[in-house]
Length: 504
Image (cartoon, rainbow, N blue to C red; front, side, top):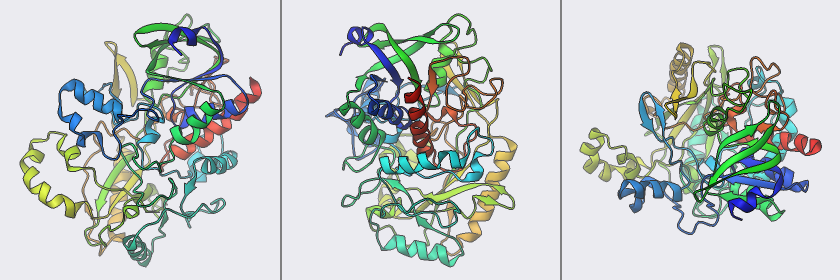
């Protein structure tokens, strides 16, 4: 359908974004017989024959060409092309752009939050339990339950195969008093599956939002418009009346009874701030002044373990996790999990650091050895601060972000507590600070809550003051927890989708 045909149709729901939030909620509505239109700025990666799969974009020959070639490579690889300003510099965040959103790129870990993570939320862990179970089933999650969880849920399907190195590392961690378990992965158990991280899967085994939610929704009659960018929302003081879009160089306004934003925790607040219809001078849904504020991102450290057995099977790279340091007498920290395989050397050299260029000849010789060393990632909960935000400066999105002193203190504690627990495995901290563009797990920019003065959305993810506007990507998080957010986004989308279907 062209944009004129889309604009001539009265939709029950227009869903902006096809990641875990948007595709999952759209599937629920399609199952209830609603006329759903998915609006996706990126490409249809399920049909893109020239999609870059099986390796990171920076390792593709196309990326070595002109500036426009690099942009085209990013589009084919399902990566964001647009830049934001961070620290006064233009930065292109490593986020998804295309069907499936960032779920098409992530490592596939879909894990529940802990009950204590909901202390500042308007819903509880128990409220989300049935939706967690349904999301795990929908996305085919395989793995083991964390032995430290009191409320673990039913057993998961058997984890994808791994090699002897995983069992040896599990034994070593257990000997040190830790409680490792196989990570819950949204992945099909195909031969040599390596849980592709940072790039599109070439083996048709990653259970991302495109495969597991968007395609089933389309099969039920939903429609998809790719290459279609939502640029603003039209609204009366109490209701969204249209979604202004640009597609193939043409502009039009789409109409629907309900509008759902799920473009990600950067693009969703940017769209709201860019929309200033009458009565919303600070941006749509921004009566609290909190749209774009409370931006959170996880602090991630990488630890190489040269004293551990070398990775010998693709399934070894993304295999284990443990939560012994999630909640400690010294404060709440976060999870520890297998990071996955190192990126291709070309991707590392693409950062164009003078030091890396100098070391490139040596790195090429050492990379096969280094890439077999197990790496653990620690994920530290980032606490909300209103000063951390996305806003517009001279028409361009700008991010202001600085870790709080408490964040820095807890990160230091995390390192202090982890190092002795890995004694004998010769742990080496191989990351310094988080790269500005590494904004995976970004969340919190449209937080939900009971009070319109202190939140953007109500407990059902409806924008305060607007009858028909919902937000279901990671923007709604009031706190970030210390675990991958993907399963919580999907579970909440199921919860909100069923509630919305009853109201429509």
